Structure formats: structure tokens, C-alpha cells
Length: 96
Image 1 (cartoon, helix red, strand yellow):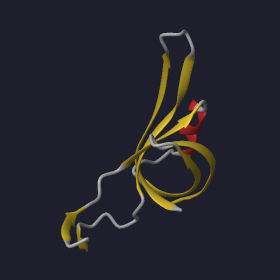
Image 2 (cartoon, one colour):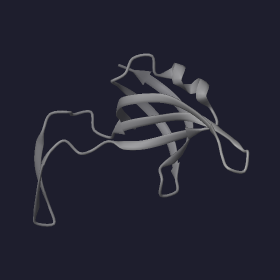
Image 3 (cartoon, rainbow, N blue to C red):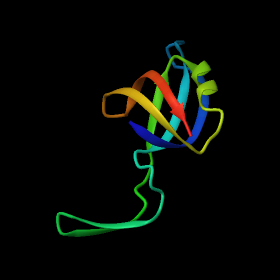
């Protein structure tokens, strides 16, 4: 799916139990169109740009190198799981 990657940053911290956690956090918009729009959803008017979604690529901080230009449109395959949008990164197919 093509997404607009607005931000990419690495993270690393140690939990209270001493476990190391690291990875990359992406803020993405699932729309290539960043122009403000208007739509009606369930009789409610929505105007503007939808807020971005936060996705974590857990355990692979080196994946930051796959996003050399940000913001940019990338075609990604992500296996989203859980309510916090943690993701297993599959591949970056193209950056525009």
C-alpha cells in the first residue's frame, strides 16, 4: 500500500524489567493526497486532512535507513497487528 511517511525516528529504551526495546516509529498517512478534502461519513462532515497513524517497527532500528527522504511517499507492505499498530516490516518497494 502506498503511504505518505511524515516522520521516521529510531527508539531504544529499557523496560522496568530490564528488557531492551528498540525499533523505528513511523507516522504515516494512508493517503497519497495531502490536499484538504471534505467527505461525509455517517451524516457527519469531515474536512481537512486525516490525522496520521503511528506505526512501530519493533526490534529493527536499522530500518530507518529505508526512509532516507521524509516526508515522502513509499510503497510498504506491513502486517499490522494489535490495537497499537505495531507492525512487522516486510519491505519498502519504492520511494518517490
